[in-house]
Image 1 (cartoon, rainbow, N blue to C red):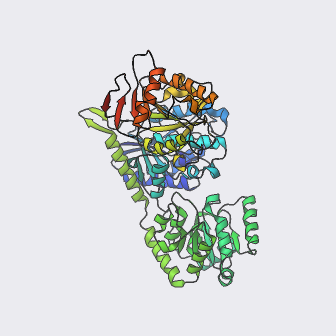
Image 2 (cartoon, rainbow, N blue to C red):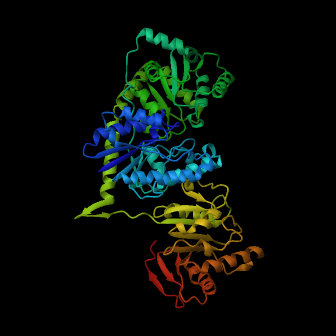
Image 3 (cartoon, rainbow, N blue to C red):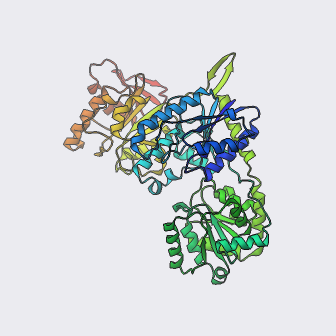
Length: 607
């Protein structure tokens, strides 16, 4: 197998020196070490020349230099500036044609969520269809949209990258928690998402810190007492505020004997905010130490020196800082949410991160019980040995080899594609929180449809409240009017609700037909009773139903009675004279009712 590794995750300003960059680099090295029977290449973005030189040096000896290929977009292309859109689209096409020219059997994208503030370009299937695997770290912004996707342009960028995930043939999730997120929120088949796990860098290990080096480090950072440690960045979901409040709730005897070390880079305003919080809960100067950025050597030393490591995050893709501390022999306690239970591997080391009291209670238990603390430390070292980059690379290669084998197999000298692409569907309907039965019906229907189709929801609603629909891409009605022919299927949901958020007053669905050869369908509630509607709405819906009748291939009614009477009669009126009747399905059963003059029934409605 010829494997092309897109390592832009090791290049960009937002990822290079953070967890994604380190993960991408470590995985790539482990893959090269394991892929002896495969031909591996690396693709780099020439818009980051400093990182290109650094990666060439880093991988020297692991891969021949002529197998590190560089392409360059015509910049600037950052998504954050709408004026760059045409160059970004050109860059996506250029990158995909460049990768295709290398004739890979499979492309691995180290990080697809790049390019909002710099010239990274990531896309899947925009111009060229290539078997592609993408590393999936988490879907935290999608699950917590109110926190992370409030800005319209950020939301648009993020959903654009979600579309790239959906187009990939294989997602390599860094934890079982992240894998479940992709299945549950993107509605992907389980077979397309594989848990490859993660590992700590080998530098995180138990080491004996010389007394003089310990004294110097403590003096530099202001750590005079035994300390409780946290590291991992300052972010809403990291729950540092809850940790500070919980530390203040410790019994005075324990609190007075310890300091809380928050080990991460902190902007001046963040530092001021956290220091003010500490004072507001009764802590004095020196109780909470904000170290700022520390070197890798200092980080390893601190993990070895801390009396307790606490990781109170609400949501993680994996939770690498907890594993790194465990690998160093620190006793670790962490949240009982998302991926952290599978990392820590011990129920009595977990707490509810939403409760400051529960965090304080677990900290007090560990700090006050030497035997428990030592047992946690020994458990952590044993647990950390179960995670390795070689194991992550093994899982990754097995998944990619299986994908390559399934997608193509040789028959003589002919290569036969094995897995068809799922049809692309536009779903036009009101959705929760719209106060209509159709919205609720659609919310229940969509997850089931998403198993068989790549779905985009067409709506001008300002928000969709059902979390189960968060992973579906949204398109405006205006966009849909101009791009309807991109879809293989279009499904319209209409009923007797006065809600018209999904309908354009002046539009008719004739212009909304999908590309030639596609099938169209319409779900409807009773439509022959205009007296049930306000006059204006009744006239509006009558125009819509008449227009839809000219382009629909199929009509789906919610019951056999509706199919046989109301819907059938409406279709006779709206399609009079065309000579071909669209087939009509009662969605509550598997029986197809053909809407011809004889009302003939036939089995096997299919999808």
